[in-house]
Image 1 (cartoon, rainbow, N blue to C red):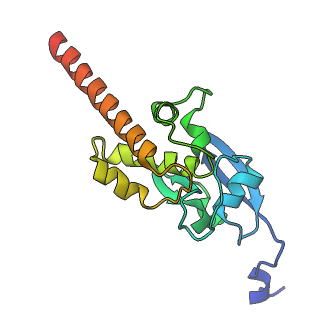
Image 2 (image 1 turned 45 degrees about the vertical axis):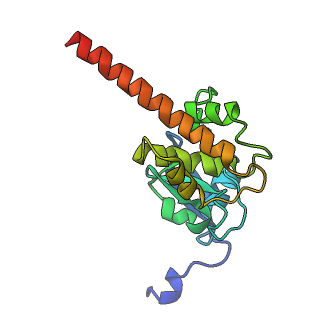
Image 3 (image 1 turned 60 degrees about the horizontal axis):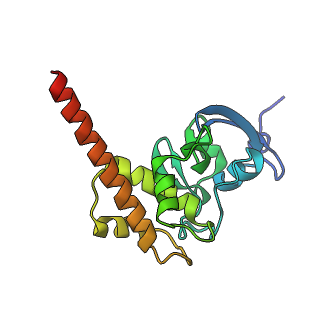
Length: 182
């Protein structure tokens, strides 16, 4: 039996198994090679906190962490996530307890309709890991990659700056305690 090039061609409707780590748990599901990661996460794995807006990577609603870095899940095929670590907004509160960033969004009323919030939270979480003490201008620049029609961004900026300040104060308090015990 000869192996022709037609034997290696996937046909429409062919599905393959994708295994990945979603929010710290090993997960797998089936998708067609053309399926977007955003659709796979939502429809196959049930993580519906990831929203799909523009499907062109412009609005940011679909932002997730891919191996620890914020990225647009509507610009990535699900098959490209094979074996990778994907974190969604559900992973920010794994024990159903809001994280400090989510609490700050709540405190500052940094969400209204909530459609864009998951993507913004994921970008902010990634950004604060890389830039722990940002200025207002830096936060606004980072947020320029997101479209929000409700908040006007000011409460979001306030929430991010609040978290950064609290984390810096906590870090400094921890360093002071360590120095006292040394």
